[in-house]
Length: 87
Image 1 (cartoon, rainbow, N blue to C red):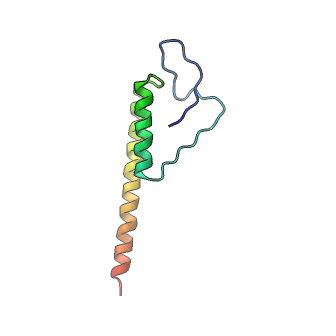
Image 2 (cartoon, one colour):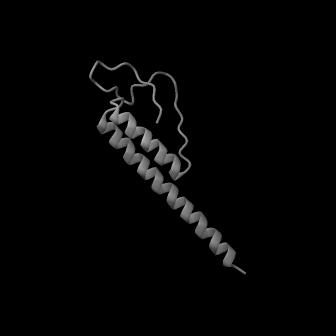
Image 3 (cartoon, rainbow, N blue to C red):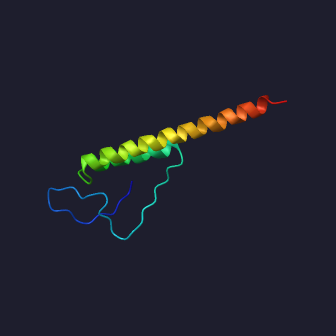
């Protein structure tokens, strides 16, 4: 999740919601996209760029997005199989 943040005091991680006027868009259309974003989030938290608690909250949201994508994919595949079985 690419963020632009304001400068935090030395030794403190900037808050992820402290953004400048730039809007950042992240592609989250597939489970792979969500995994990549979660990996990036992990690296940012380990590097101290964002607070661990904020990273945890965002990671949970990414997990929910991943589950929703899986559910939608499953539903689409099931619909296709049912349509193929119809005479």
